[in-house]
Image 1 (cartoon, rainbow, N blue to C red):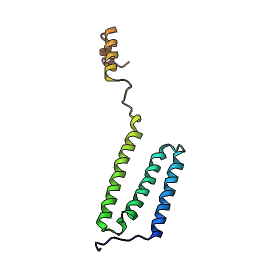
Image 2: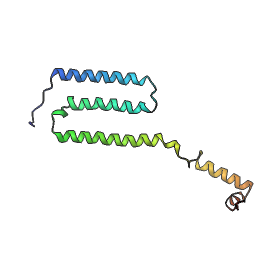
Image 3: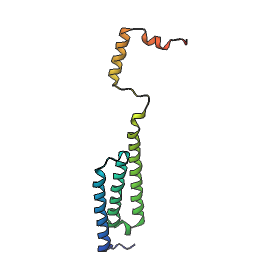
Image 4: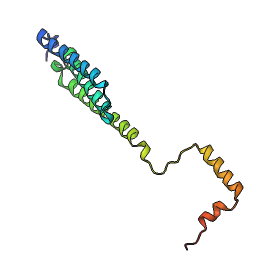
Length: 131
């Protein structure tokens, strides 16, 4: 490819600006509704589409060296992977069966209180014989 600047036609720029305006309207429209777990992925998909349009057309990535497009695509892929990790972590954080409510200090205080009432209560729990 030559080192010259690519001239984008007014028609192409108008179509992209129209698409960006429509996608912005879609973002505002979807923000009015509670879509549950689909709210964040939909917002991210719309934002990614808008960013891809801007980078591809306005920043002329479409007509640039193909390695730059590959680097951009790999970057988007990594962002999707990392955001997916965060979303999976926060979505399933409350489903762990071995968690208890309260801080460590509260648990230690309640355990000390229980032992002060019955000093051998904690040892009885583990030394039971099956009946």
